[in-house]
Image 1: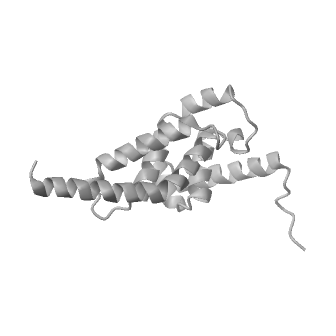
Image 2: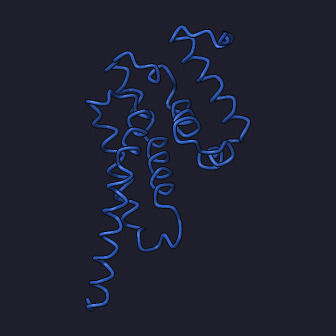
Image 3: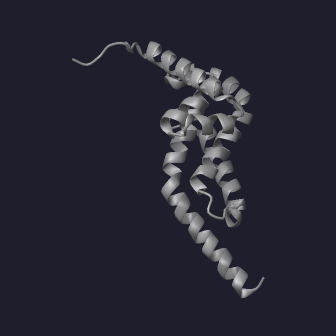
Length: 159
């Protein structure tokens, strides 16, 4: 490896470390919401995040202006969607009473992307390979379920 390549690798490593330092908290929270694990015991969320960050690091030099946070979030969502059946089976055995665990993995994914991460409906639909109308319906149904489970009257208005 040439001196120039070594310098570039060190620069990429420092950039990635800075990215991880700034983004890990929010990404871990998103992963924890996806897995519906408690924040203080979230091994599945940590595994998802580690894999997503590893993928982002592997492609770091080729991002070329792409937002690394968006890239990692997409990787996190894709990995969760691919393994959702496993999370659901595992989760049935470990009920803790969180509101999001009442949702299907797909509903949880839509809610986290749309409401927590603020990803636009069309972008969420493209990421999940669903029509935008389906994303809208999943989000609406999931929010209604959470409100119902929480005992909140959605039609009540503040005085």
